[in-house]
Image (cartoon, rainbow, N blue to C red):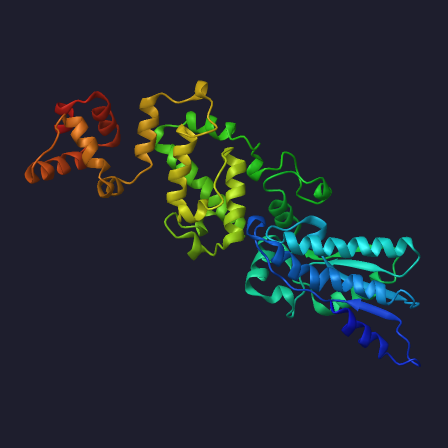
Length: 376
Protein backbone atom coordinates (compact mmCIF):
# COMPACT_ATOMS: atom_id res chain seq x y z
CA UNK A 1 0.00 0.00 0.00
CA UNK A 2 2.85 2.42 0.69
CA UNK A 3 4.70 1.47 -2.54
CA UNK A 4 3.61 4.13 -5.01
CA UNK A 5 4.33 2.12 -8.15
CA UNK A 6 2.66 -1.03 -6.84
CA UNK A 7 -0.46 0.86 -5.73
CA UNK A 8 -0.66 2.71 -9.05
CA UNK A 9 -0.53 -0.63 -10.85
CA UNK A 10 -3.42 -1.98 -8.79
CA UNK A 11 -5.56 1.07 -9.56
CA UNK A 12 -4.66 0.94 -13.25
CA UNK A 13 -5.88 -2.66 -13.41
CA UNK A 14 -9.44 -1.68 -12.49
CA UNK A 15 -11.59 -2.42 -15.60
CA UNK A 16 -12.87 0.62 -17.48
CA UNK A 17 -16.35 -0.89 -17.71
CA UNK A 18 -16.43 -1.31 -13.93
CA UNK A 19 -14.91 1.98 -12.73
CA UNK A 20 -13.70 2.42 -9.18
CA UNK A 21 -16.45 3.94 -7.03
CA UNK A 22 -15.29 3.27 -3.46
CA UNK A 23 -12.03 3.02 -1.53
CA UNK A 24 -11.77 1.42 1.90
CA UNK A 25 -8.37 1.94 3.51
CA UNK A 26 -7.80 -0.65 6.23
CA UNK A 27 -4.00 -1.00 6.22
CA UNK A 28 -2.04 -0.74 9.45
CA UNK A 29 0.53 -2.29 11.77
CA UNK A 30 1.10 -2.03 15.50
CA UNK A 31 4.40 -1.40 17.28
CA UNK A 32 3.27 -0.30 20.73
CA UNK A 33 5.55 1.03 23.42
CA UNK A 34 5.80 3.75 26.06
CA UNK A 35 7.01 7.05 24.67
CA UNK A 36 10.62 6.82 25.89
CA UNK A 37 10.88 3.38 24.25
CA UNK A 38 9.86 4.63 20.80
CA UNK A 39 12.42 5.73 18.20
CA UNK A 40 12.25 7.05 14.60
CA UNK A 41 12.26 3.53 13.15
CA UNK A 42 9.25 2.48 15.22
CA UNK A 43 7.37 5.60 14.15
CA UNK A 44 8.36 5.09 10.50
CA UNK A 45 7.05 1.51 10.34
CA UNK A 46 3.66 2.46 11.76
CA UNK A 47 3.31 5.66 9.72
CA UNK A 48 4.31 3.96 6.47
CA UNK A 49 1.54 1.36 6.71
CA UNK A 50 -1.15 3.66 8.06
CA UNK A 51 -0.48 7.25 6.95
CA UNK A 52 1.79 7.06 3.88
CA UNK A 53 -0.55 4.59 2.19
CA UNK A 54 -3.59 6.80 2.87
CA UNK A 55 -1.85 9.83 1.37
CA UNK A 56 -0.97 7.78 -1.73
CA UNK A 57 -4.57 6.64 -2.12
CA UNK A 58 -5.69 10.26 -1.88
CA UNK A 59 -3.16 11.33 -4.51
CA UNK A 60 -3.67 8.48 -6.97
CA UNK A 61 -7.50 8.67 -6.93
CA UNK A 62 -7.66 12.47 -7.18
CA UNK A 63 -9.23 12.28 -10.66
CA UNK A 64 -11.77 9.60 -9.67
CA UNK A 65 -15.41 10.43 -8.90
CA UNK A 66 -15.62 8.34 -5.75
CA UNK A 67 -18.81 7.85 -3.77
CA UNK A 68 -16.89 6.50 -0.75
CA UNK A 69 -13.38 7.13 0.58
CA UNK A 70 -13.38 5.33 3.94
CA UNK A 71 -10.35 5.50 6.23
CA UNK A 72 -9.96 3.06 9.11
CA UNK A 73 -8.70 5.29 11.91
CA UNK A 74 -8.51 4.39 15.60
CA UNK A 75 -10.06 5.55 18.85
CA UNK A 76 -6.48 6.05 20.05
CA UNK A 77 -6.31 9.12 17.78
CA UNK A 78 -9.44 10.57 19.38
CA UNK A 79 -8.76 10.00 23.08
CA UNK A 80 -5.14 8.88 23.26
CA UNK A 81 -4.07 5.50 24.57
CA UNK A 82 -1.08 4.69 26.78
CA UNK A 83 1.68 3.03 24.78
CA UNK A 84 0.33 3.98 21.36
CA UNK A 85 1.89 7.35 20.68
CA UNK A 86 3.06 6.35 17.20
CA UNK A 87 -0.22 4.63 16.26
CA UNK A 88 -2.35 7.51 17.59
CA UNK A 89 -0.36 10.06 15.59
CA UNK A 90 -0.65 8.04 12.36
CA UNK A 91 -4.40 7.70 12.76
CA UNK A 92 -4.80 11.39 13.59
CA UNK A 93 -3.37 12.07 10.13
CA UNK A 94 -6.19 9.99 8.61
CA UNK A 95 -8.74 12.12 10.45
CA UNK A 96 -7.08 15.28 9.13
CA UNK A 97 -7.01 13.86 5.59
CA UNK A 98 -10.75 13.22 5.71
CA UNK A 99 -11.36 16.80 6.88
CA UNK A 100 -9.23 18.14 4.02
CA UNK A 101 -10.96 16.03 1.37
CA UNK A 102 -14.41 17.10 2.59
CA UNK A 103 -13.29 20.74 2.56
CA UNK A 104 -12.50 20.30 -1.14
CA UNK A 105 -15.87 18.69 -1.88
CA UNK A 106 -14.56 15.13 -2.16
CA UNK A 107 -15.88 12.00 -0.49
CA UNK A 108 -14.16 11.03 2.76
CA UNK A 109 -15.03 9.47 6.10
CA UNK A 110 -12.46 8.65 8.77
CA UNK A 111 -13.84 6.18 11.32
CA UNK A 112 -12.06 5.99 14.66
CA UNK A 113 -12.70 2.36 15.52
CA UNK A 114 -12.51 0.67 18.87
CA UNK A 115 -11.30 -2.93 18.96
CA UNK A 116 -13.00 -5.38 16.58
CA UNK A 117 -13.85 -8.89 17.67
CA UNK A 118 -13.24 -11.97 15.54
CA UNK A 119 -9.52 -11.41 14.88
CA UNK A 120 -7.57 -8.49 13.49
CA UNK A 121 -5.01 -6.19 15.06
CA UNK A 122 -6.60 -6.23 18.52
CA UNK A 123 -6.63 -10.03 18.61
CA UNK A 124 -3.04 -9.99 19.88
CA UNK A 125 -3.12 -11.00 23.56
CA UNK A 126 -1.35 -7.86 24.72
CA UNK A 127 -3.57 -5.52 22.67
CA UNK A 128 -6.73 -7.33 23.77
CA UNK A 129 -5.71 -7.11 27.43
CA UNK A 130 -4.94 -3.40 27.12
CA UNK A 131 -8.37 -2.82 25.55
CA UNK A 132 -10.10 -4.79 28.30
CA UNK A 133 -8.30 -2.84 31.02
CA UNK A 134 -9.43 0.47 29.56
CA UNK A 135 -13.08 -0.59 29.21
CA UNK A 136 -13.14 -1.09 25.42
CA UNK A 137 -15.13 -4.19 24.51
CA UNK A 138 -14.61 -5.93 21.13
CA UNK A 139 -17.09 -4.87 18.45
CA UNK A 140 -19.29 -7.50 16.84
CA UNK A 141 -17.98 -7.60 13.23
CA UNK A 142 -21.45 -7.69 11.67
CA UNK A 143 -22.54 -4.66 13.70
CA UNK A 144 -19.28 -2.87 12.82
CA UNK A 145 -19.81 -3.41 9.07
CA UNK A 146 -23.35 -2.10 9.42
CA UNK A 147 -21.98 0.98 11.19
CA UNK A 148 -19.42 1.40 8.40
CA UNK A 149 -22.15 1.46 5.77
CA UNK A 150 -24.12 4.10 7.65
CA UNK A 151 -21.21 6.37 8.53
CA UNK A 152 -19.82 6.65 4.99
CA UNK A 153 -23.21 7.95 3.87
CA UNK A 154 -23.36 10.57 6.65
CA UNK A 155 -22.22 14.17 6.35
CA UNK A 156 -19.62 14.05 9.13
CA UNK A 157 -16.02 13.61 7.89
CA UNK A 158 -14.96 11.90 11.13
CA UNK A 159 -16.76 9.69 13.61
CA UNK A 160 -15.97 7.24 16.41
CA UNK A 161 -17.45 3.75 16.66
CA UNK A 162 -16.63 1.70 19.77
CA UNK A 163 -18.28 -0.52 22.37
CA UNK A 164 -17.31 1.13 25.64
CA UNK A 165 -17.88 0.39 29.32
CA UNK A 166 -18.32 4.06 30.33
CA UNK A 167 -17.37 3.72 34.01
CA UNK A 168 -14.17 1.77 33.41
CA UNK A 169 -13.28 3.82 30.34
CA UNK A 170 -13.60 7.14 32.16
CA UNK A 171 -11.68 5.82 35.15
CA UNK A 172 -8.84 4.55 32.95
CA UNK A 173 -8.48 7.70 30.86
CA UNK A 174 -8.80 10.20 33.70
CA UNK A 175 -6.75 8.38 36.33
CA UNK A 176 -3.93 10.93 36.31
CA UNK A 177 -5.47 14.14 34.96
CA UNK A 178 -8.90 15.50 33.99
CA UNK A 179 -10.14 15.23 30.41
CA UNK A 180 -12.54 17.84 29.04
CA UNK A 181 -13.09 15.56 26.06
CA UNK A 182 -14.73 12.94 28.27
CA UNK A 183 -16.55 15.29 30.63
CA UNK A 184 -19.96 14.48 29.12
CA UNK A 185 -19.66 10.73 29.74
CA UNK A 186 -21.41 9.03 32.68
CA UNK A 187 -19.18 8.58 35.71
CA UNK A 188 -17.05 11.66 35.08
CA UNK A 189 -16.53 13.92 38.08
CA UNK A 190 -13.97 16.52 39.19
CA UNK A 191 -11.39 16.32 40.64
CA UNK A 192 -10.51 13.26 38.59
CA UNK A 193 -7.42 11.73 40.13
CA UNK A 194 -7.68 8.12 41.37
CA UNK A 195 -10.16 7.97 44.21
CA UNK A 196 -10.48 11.76 44.20
CA UNK A 197 -6.77 12.43 44.76
CA UNK A 198 -5.70 15.98 44.07
CA UNK A 199 -2.30 14.94 42.76
CA UNK A 200 -0.07 16.53 45.44
CA UNK A 201 -0.32 13.81 48.10
CA UNK A 202 -1.20 16.22 50.93
CA UNK A 203 -4.41 14.43 51.81
CA UNK A 204 -2.61 11.09 51.97
CA UNK A 205 0.17 12.52 54.14
CA UNK A 206 -2.37 14.13 56.42
CA UNK A 207 -4.20 10.81 56.72
CA UNK A 208 -0.97 8.97 57.54
CA UNK A 209 0.00 11.59 60.13
CA UNK A 210 -3.32 11.06 61.91
CA UNK A 211 -2.96 7.27 62.07
CA UNK A 212 -1.22 5.17 64.70
CA UNK A 213 2.12 3.91 63.33
CA UNK A 214 0.77 0.36 63.17
CA UNK A 215 -1.88 1.38 60.59
CA UNK A 216 0.27 3.49 58.26
CA UNK A 217 1.87 0.58 56.45
CA UNK A 218 -1.52 -1.10 55.99
CA UNK A 219 -2.98 2.12 54.55
CA UNK A 220 -0.25 2.49 51.93
CA UNK A 221 -0.44 -1.21 51.11
CA UNK A 222 -4.20 -0.84 50.57
CA UNK A 223 -3.52 2.08 48.23
CA UNK A 224 -1.07 0.03 46.15
CA UNK A 225 -3.36 -2.99 45.97
CA UNK A 226 -6.37 -0.85 45.09
CA UNK A 227 -4.60 0.98 42.27
CA UNK A 228 -3.17 -2.31 40.95
CA UNK A 229 -6.68 -3.79 40.87
CA UNK A 230 -7.94 -0.76 38.94
CA UNK A 231 -5.18 -1.03 36.33
CA UNK A 232 -5.80 -4.74 35.82
CA UNK A 233 -9.59 -4.36 35.81
CA UNK A 234 -9.98 -6.66 38.82
CA UNK A 235 -13.06 -6.51 41.07
CA UNK A 236 -11.22 -5.39 44.23
CA UNK A 237 -8.04 -5.41 46.28
CA UNK A 238 -8.73 -8.96 47.46
CA UNK A 239 -7.67 -10.11 43.99
CA UNK A 240 -4.22 -8.54 44.46
CA UNK A 241 -2.20 -10.61 46.93
CA UNK A 242 0.20 -8.42 48.95
CA UNK A 243 3.17 -10.71 48.32
CA UNK A 244 2.34 -11.85 44.78
CA UNK A 245 4.72 -10.58 42.09
CA UNK A 246 3.30 -7.91 39.80
CA UNK A 247 4.38 -9.96 36.78
CA UNK A 248 2.37 -12.93 38.05
CA UNK A 249 -0.65 -10.65 38.51
CA UNK A 250 -0.52 -9.83 34.79
CA UNK A 251 1.40 -6.54 34.63
CA UNK A 252 3.30 -5.73 31.45
CA UNK A 253 5.41 -2.62 30.81
CA UNK A 254 2.37 -0.50 29.88
CA UNK A 255 0.45 -1.62 32.95
CA UNK A 256 3.49 -0.88 35.11
CA UNK A 257 3.68 2.67 33.78
CA UNK A 258 -0.05 3.14 34.34
CA UNK A 259 0.29 1.96 37.93
CA UNK A 260 3.25 4.32 38.42
CA UNK A 261 1.16 7.21 37.10
CA UNK A 262 -1.78 6.41 39.37
CA UNK A 263 0.42 6.09 42.45
CA UNK A 264 2.22 9.29 41.53
CA UNK A 265 -1.13 11.11 41.36
CA UNK A 266 -2.20 9.66 44.71
CA UNK A 267 1.05 10.37 46.57
CA UNK A 268 2.37 13.51 44.88
CA UNK A 269 5.72 11.76 44.48
CA UNK A 270 7.91 11.82 41.38
CA UNK A 271 8.21 8.07 40.85
CA UNK A 272 10.56 6.13 38.61
CA UNK A 273 9.20 4.51 35.40
CA UNK A 274 10.78 1.25 36.64
CA UNK A 275 9.03 1.50 40.01
CA UNK A 276 7.05 -1.74 39.67
CA UNK A 277 10.08 -3.74 38.53
CA UNK A 278 12.35 -2.31 41.23
CA UNK A 279 9.80 -3.25 43.91
CA UNK A 280 8.16 -6.34 42.41
CA UNK A 281 5.31 -7.03 44.85
CA UNK A 282 2.63 -4.83 46.43
CA UNK A 283 4.10 -5.21 49.92
CA UNK A 284 7.60 -4.25 48.76
CA UNK A 285 6.27 -1.32 46.77
CA UNK A 286 4.15 -0.12 49.70
CA UNK A 287 7.19 -0.31 51.98
CA UNK A 288 9.13 1.87 49.53
CA UNK A 289 6.32 4.42 49.16
CA UNK A 290 5.80 4.71 52.90
CA UNK A 291 9.47 5.53 53.34
CA UNK A 292 9.26 8.25 50.68
CA UNK A 293 6.05 9.67 52.10
CA UNK A 294 7.52 9.96 55.58
CA UNK A 295 11.02 11.09 54.74
CA UNK A 296 11.41 11.52 50.98
CA UNK A 297 11.25 14.34 48.44
CA UNK A 298 8.06 16.35 48.26
CA UNK A 299 7.46 16.51 52.02
CA UNK A 300 7.35 19.98 53.55
CA UNK A 301 9.81 20.04 56.45
CA UNK A 302 7.25 21.93 58.53
CA UNK A 303 4.91 18.93 58.24
CA UNK A 304 7.59 16.31 58.96
CA UNK A 305 6.87 13.71 61.62
CA UNK A 306 9.04 13.71 64.74
CA UNK A 307 12.04 11.45 64.28
CA UNK A 308 10.77 8.94 66.79
CA UNK A 309 7.49 8.44 64.94
CA UNK A 310 9.20 8.23 61.56
CA UNK A 311 11.60 5.56 62.77
CA UNK A 312 8.79 3.60 64.38
CA UNK A 313 6.68 3.73 61.20
CA UNK A 314 9.57 2.70 58.97
CA UNK A 315 10.52 -0.23 61.20
CA UNK A 316 6.90 -1.24 61.46
CA UNK A 317 6.61 -1.49 57.70
CA UNK A 318 9.45 -4.04 57.46
CA UNK A 319 8.91 -7.69 58.51
CA UNK A 320 11.12 -8.76 61.40
CA UNK A 321 12.74 -11.62 59.46
CA UNK A 322 13.71 -9.19 56.69
CA UNK A 323 15.43 -6.96 59.25
CA UNK A 324 17.33 -9.99 60.51
CA UNK A 325 18.35 -11.20 57.01
CA UNK A 326 19.62 -7.75 56.04
CA UNK A 327 21.74 -7.41 59.17
CA UNK A 328 19.85 -4.35 60.37
CA UNK A 329 18.40 -6.21 63.33
CA UNK A 330 21.87 -7.04 64.66
CA UNK A 331 22.95 -3.42 64.33
CA UNK A 332 19.86 -2.19 66.16
CA UNK A 333 20.48 -4.68 68.92
CA UNK A 334 24.09 -3.61 69.26
CA UNK A 335 22.98 0.01 69.45
CA UNK A 336 20.42 -0.83 72.10
CA UNK A 337 22.89 -2.95 74.10
CA UNK A 338 25.78 -0.54 73.72
CA UNK A 339 28.00 -3.44 72.69
CA UNK A 340 30.46 -3.21 69.81
CA UNK A 341 30.43 -6.94 69.14
CA UNK A 342 29.40 -10.22 70.71
CA UNK A 343 30.12 -13.96 70.52
CA UNK A 344 27.88 -16.64 69.07
CA UNK A 345 26.21 -17.41 72.38
CA UNK A 346 25.58 -13.74 73.01
CA UNK A 347 24.14 -13.34 69.50
CA UNK A 348 21.73 -16.22 70.05
CA UNK A 349 20.69 -14.74 73.39
CA UNK A 350 20.21 -11.34 71.72
CA UNK A 351 18.08 -12.88 68.98
CA UNK A 352 15.80 -14.44 71.58
CA UNK A 353 15.59 -11.12 73.42
CA UNK A 354 14.79 -9.14 70.29
CA UNK A 355 12.11 -11.63 69.24
CA UNK A 356 10.44 -11.17 72.59
CA UNK A 357 10.30 -7.36 72.24
CA UNK A 358 7.40 -5.64 70.54
CA UNK A 359 8.10 -2.92 68.00
CA UNK A 360 7.57 0.01 70.36
CA UNK A 361 10.04 -1.48 72.83
CA UNK A 362 12.58 -2.01 70.06
CA UNK A 363 12.30 1.60 68.93
CA UNK A 364 12.46 2.95 72.45
CA UNK A 365 15.55 0.87 73.18
CA UNK A 366 17.26 1.93 69.98
CA UNK A 367 16.50 5.62 70.51
CA UNK A 368 17.41 5.68 74.22
CA UNK A 369 20.39 3.34 73.95
CA UNK A 370 18.94 1.47 76.95
CA UNK A 371 20.70 -1.93 77.30
CA UNK A 372 18.74 -2.91 80.41
CA UNK A 373 15.44 -2.36 78.61
CA UNK A 374 16.63 -4.44 75.63
CA UNK A 375 17.43 -7.37 77.88
CA UNK A 376 14.10 -7.33 79.73
